[in-house]
Amino acid sequence: MSNEKTISTRGRIWFETLAGKQAKHRPSVPSVLVADTTLQKERVRFLAIVPDPENRFPCARQGQVGLQEGWNLAKQIRDAIKADENGEKRAIIAIVDVPSQAYGRREELLGIFLAAAAATDAYVSARLAGHPVISLLVGHAISGGFLTHGAQANRLLAFNDPGVTVHAMAKNAAARVTRRTVEELDKLAETIIPMSYKIEDYAKLGTLYKLIDGVKVDSPEPEQVEQVRDDLSAAIADARSGQRDLSDRLQSQGAQKNRIATLVVRQRLAAEWHSN
Amino acid sequence: MSQPTPGAASSSPPTLRDPREYLTRKSLVELNARERAQALLDEGSYRELLGPFERLESPWLLQQGVVPQADDGLIVARGKISGTDSVILAIEGQFQGGGIGEVSGAKAAAALDLALEDAKRGQPVQVVLLLETGGVRLQEANLGLEVIAEINSSLIALRQHVPVVGVIAGMVGCFGGMSISASLCSYLIMTREARLGLNGPEVIEEQSGIEEFDSKDRQLIWGVNGGEQRHATGFADYLAEDDVAAIKECIVQAFGRGIPATHRSEQVDDYLKRLAAIDVSHQLESSEIRKLWSKGE
Image (cartoon, rainbow over all chains, first blue to last red; front, side, top):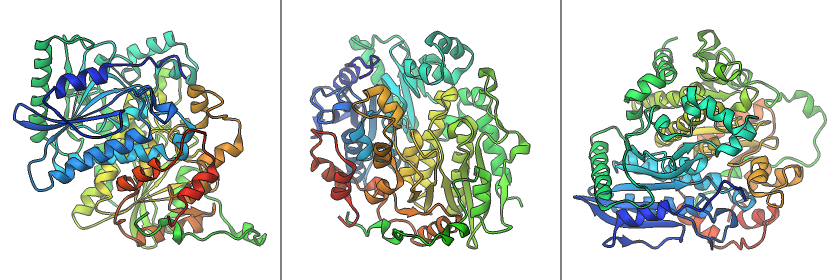
């Protein structure tokens, strides 16, 4: 296994802190935590993927998103969609701390790409049905792990902390694949925003709804936890009044500044789409 | 599977072929992305949007010493397939391994959104994705990741209104985040030359060791990722010959079936049951999965 994978406890810490003691836990596999509770007046289903050293899939024991994780996430989200079919749509909050997807032969043979698609589908379907889908990034949010668990939220929040990272590939691996040293990679990231491993830089792309400052992520103070609850409640309210697709991200100041190419593509393609 | 088996429509090839067949076949795999789109659209109907003369290239590559391409490696072509309005999104596998960057990804996501508007207005357009990609283009890392999330979101919204057909012809195959997109298509067509996986063999070997996956073992690779295995185990709906006419015929057949009653990515209880029934205490053989998950189960 890669030396970059240290087992993180942040997902569990924040799941337990936010879901709290009054939460009703739902049966699932040990690596997918699910609890129903309320946040201010909102009904919320919290979801987290956490390490399970006993996971029957050996490549998914350190919190990676594997087959069971993708399919069980899909199940838990779809159950909420179905239960709320004719009523108020509860909020779904993903606590995100995923080092990567699971890198294994069993996973590929049994279709991990479809498990990832199933969770993606469930999150998107919840969002399109009117559930506010919120992601709170408390640790790593890497590559296929993040695409499966976190990336499809109406509103993304992240702690402004060096341990919080969004990226397409863990740093050491990315350096090897692009034939650069880690130092060269860091240097590039100073000028090329999407290459950066820093969450402040990720925030510049306009995808984040909020970067939360001043929280001790590994051992939060009670007033910090209250602040995070307020932030999540505000995000839910904001999602309810926003678009159900991801277009709000493109309206952000960050996107207007740093995703100019995206906006030009969208504008010109729309113009050419119907012309002959 | 509870729904009718999707793969049943494809023909199983004879073991011995008439050699003359090879002379009349026209390979799709040997064509570049633009030629593929031209070959699949009806004669004279091809119209490229955001073509190379508009020079919408990646704003991030030159600073990293990589020469950008004027279409950023993704062709958007409108036209007709057997007389029906269609759009083909063709990824160029020869440019950066088909890696998805800000511009190429935005082209795809925007096209899917425009097709959704058309479908909602009652003027549906058929969307075909030609997938040859390693996933996120690492030089545009987080924007590549973001646009793939946007593609997946738009694809799921669109396929509720009109089927979306994916084609993995080869030789690059379809890996990384885009393997998720492939699995979200209403129907997926593969050739024997195509491969599909979330993590490619080299990445697995590097991350988990050679005993987990020997990336030099060609038989293992094709047994895991190859089109024949993917079709036999229900992850692809059609196994097509590498022939323009044969692939086009599969596309037409797929659209003819309409929106699936249940998309594969919605068959949650079924797949959870299948996973629970498999003993994973040892490495699995391709043949085992074929036996357990062969079509009609």
